[in-house]
Length: 251
Image 1 (cartoon, one colour):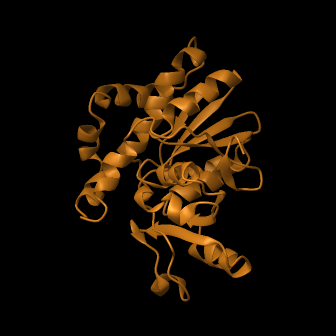
Image 2: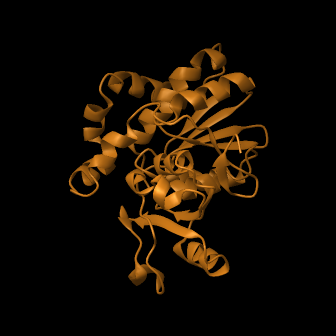
Image 3: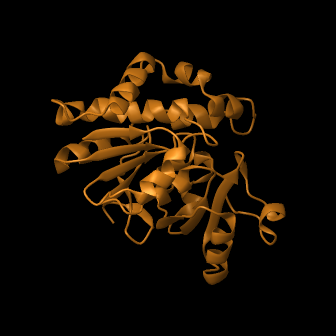
């Protein structure tokens, strides 16, 4: 079965659901999953996604060499929010350069993306999806002959996000033939149709997205939007392991 979830309201249900025979692909196009695959492509050793700021700070206390990355309301987390340290990085893929993250481990917390990954912890496998690595993820899915694929949209605040639905729909479109013949949920049909309507010009399409409009209004973050829509610029399949650590699948 090919299925899509759209909002953070579904995270709690995912934690209660039997996902032992399901592969999940999590999308947070703007910007957490895009930043994660960028970091790994630029040589980061691993990313540890956590839900709360305090969890990241505790990991740093135990591992002083750990980089801290993340945002709240789109902005890098600072000492005023942690009570102790500024985070090294925010949530812009442009920050995760080889010079800054090469050979480093990163603890990361974002408003929605890392929560979505945590909600899928019980799945058979959990992949990190974005437009940047869309085709390699789709090719991996095709090679596995999966019984169940659940595409999880991280959303914006507690609502659905248009850009994540576009990403989920793009993946559904790529793997459609594998699940055709009655093995497609209505949610996947909806996501695929939305993607097909906007696929000719994704940058124009996301002008309607709440999160994209917010980022485009910020001079230091507006370039992230076009970057995160750059399809197939990263040749990495990223997986969250059973231990809750995101690494390149080839590692």
